[in-house]
Length: 422
Image (tube, rainbow, N blue to C red):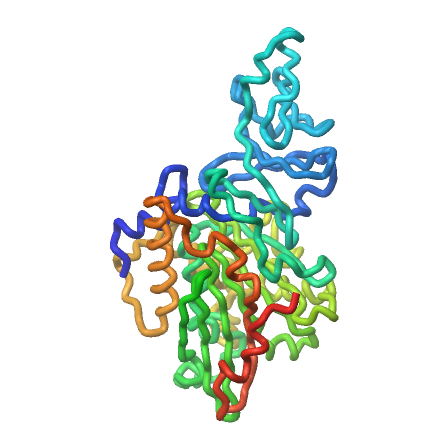
């Protein structure tokens, strides 16, 4: 259970809110690099942390992220001309470079100094891992750009994507950090249902260790002839790194890979889920067809999304639930692992009332994650650097998904696999 005031503290992300100010102390993805395919391409609307912005790739290839409205008469910059290293408002021609400087003001006399006194709000950007990242906080506190392993993986070895989720960012993150639901909600072969009564195989034994970036946690399921170990990393404030379900990958002939999500608030009621996957082995690229196959299985393949990254299976059509399939094969009757997550998380409402929760033993990771976020908001309020703002503290970590013999300790057996190779 989370107190109502703490729930408000963590879920509201606009400027001046505790969580909003905390998010602004980290580099976060603003959009996919592929959304700005080339220099001087069309601008893109971006909404982050309750702020309306416009992104553009200038003539030199750099990305600008500026206020959605011109500082002159508040005309929409989305309709602006992206030309000659700047974006020009089409209302009166005021032009701004990607750092917010006004470089031309044709509506004023040539000798006027007015343009030297006007800027448009602009946030710094950096590209890595197929994402355009931005930092929206105070410049004197800006950390170095992200240095996670999935960012360092070469383009041939990785695949980024994103999906819109229509609920508050925290309930999306809650679902990602919760590992105990995986073998229940996402079961695609229910058989006679006896698996629900096998506690050891269905519900993982959780182990959690706090770190300089958040925490490392494992879910261990004991099966008749081996143990299935999944080791995750929660990186503040919104990243989950995890190994892949090897059984499914091997069954489909896939190369081993690692993946994860970043849950980025659009506003208080909607979230961008940025997804990443990358090859487990630096010597083995990630085949495009494999990446697309994984996306299809997740429910976010090319045919599953609209052009604006919304799922075609959504609350308006009850996620196209198939009740016959639910009775015979799939526990939910909903196609797509992530679509199943969305159905539950969005179905809780825009912002869930956590004061009505009753958390159990398998909710430990969720509990600790919320505690860390609350601590981070208080650190920011007192002028300290929040946990994990320096991504270098997580540069050498990687998640794991492995089967190991029953008589081995997972920490010993997998210690080499937990170290980044890129």
